[in-house]
Length: 192
Image (cartoon, rainbow, N blue to C red):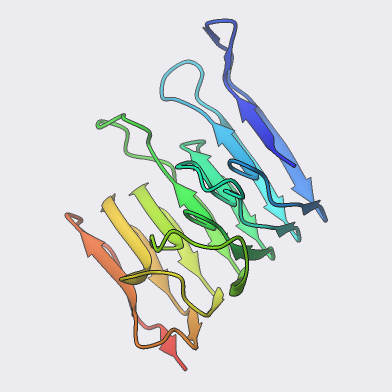
């Protein structure tokens, strides 16, 4: 199953707001399982909620966009109480696409579980990728690993909070790695 909510309709940026997925079971898709596609400007999406869902990792056909949940920069998304399984690329991916000036999205990701021991076979990329500014990733439990490096990878981020998460059975991998970022809070996290 693949669900994509896109701001681009017939060449026009229309935007979307206040979309909620609650209590859903989203099966693994060939590409991304659930994708909110938005660009900055007049078509900017906002106030997305995904809560208490099971999101199987995408990329069944081993494609470059094999994500469980892909947030292409909607503002103020709330991702809480969900269960994620392993994906070919990322179980959770926040990306600005190619937009270098975009500073959002202020996504709140809390109290989710990531079971990286089941699901779609992985490419070895970090299973959780955060980009942009003012994101909060806290109170989550991550079990297992699929990455050749870190579990949570952060690129071009500012003022993100990644703390109070529990990492279990991660095989000595680095819980969080940061590339070219500033102003982030990365502790405390627990490794068991």
